[in-house]
Image (cartoon, rainbow, N blue to C red; front, side, top):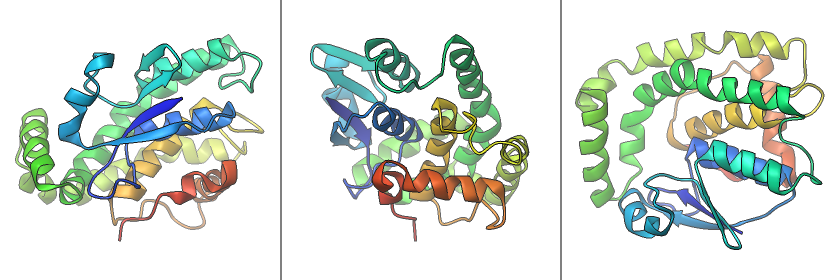
Length: 229
């Protein structure tokens, strides 16, 4: 198996939230893929075989699967004898909802808050691409986004409350053990950890405890990502 991931200057520190949810899903299924690091400006050429302009891309023998959600579904269907990511059809639908709902109220405010810090982590040629594409997407210069950084961080933190409340009753979003819902949220926190110097969680919060437990899973897979300093 090969998994293509996104990196900045340091090829050992992949930071894509979508790759991280896929890495955790693969570990959940008992797989250790070969990681193929790509910078932003390498993606178009290197992933032309997959007809994809985004990561993750998974290559499993003769199968090429794009998009983190499609990869999760592929793993569930191709390897049903291994631990389930969803725990059945109901869990799959709930994970899909979790996947979609978290985009607007977590991914977008976080992206707006950390976009400038991501820019700083990139090689010069990647910075030019990143600035042009992200400013077009956001409709503002990166410097303008920096002016609203704290506002967007506050919105991200405020939108965490349903997750915090859930963890007051359950150990994981999958119940007694982690499921794909956990990996979706964990990927977002890995993105924040690898790119931003900000602190996102209070140390006495349930989410902080949950994230620490997630860091230690699969022989500390997630803990290998360094906190941006």
